[in-house]
Length: 258
Image 1 (cartoon, rainbow, N blue to C red):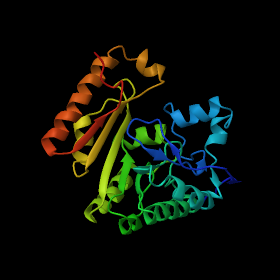
Image 2 (tube, rainbow, N blue to C red):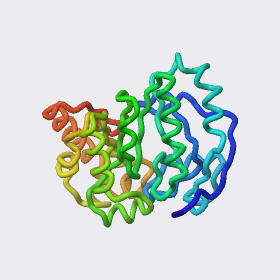
Image 3 (tube, rainbow, N blue to C red):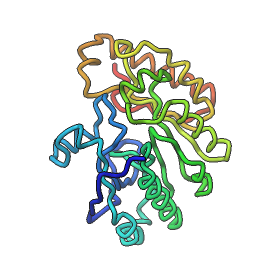
Image 4 (tube, helix red, strand yellow):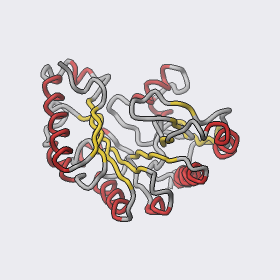
């Protein structure tokens, strides 16, 4: 079982996110061992500001050891302002093969819920069934951009298999938890030729679907000239599916174009 590369400390934890469907968030891990090969916004941002220098450094995660102590100070001050806290926009709270990170994620959710704060979770790992014991207001999600395991191994090499993600999510759904899926960054046919309907069918039990295009990628903008038309059509497909099934949805900004 791999271990975190080391421990670091921070002075603050909870902050207002700029992500369109988020409220507050926290990132108690630096780096991500899932090592996604499509342009990862978190990696690009950390690299831009000099916190991470290389991909090899990025995939060796560091745990913020004073996370819970910071939360004890920040929760009383901020809880009246917070609608929800997302785990996490610049790392993965259930990183494959890192029990120390999973343990911290569980402790963070427990502490936030104890203060009456709802949590939303997104992972490319395996959601533990113990999450069903926490607040039923929490929302648990997985990223699922394909059902093709060869594509996953190529683009998300350190992540859980798509089947494992789906099975864990369905178990939480069956326990009465709110579940969702992020189909982002969805690839264009020059990256992988696939049927979005099959992915939608696989997640038809969820409460919400978020859909978004692949960004920061020349293979899309230059390699697939019809990318705007493609994303307009796929977004409509998601909207029609969700309306038919009574599933909430959110189409990310700039996915639909004129």
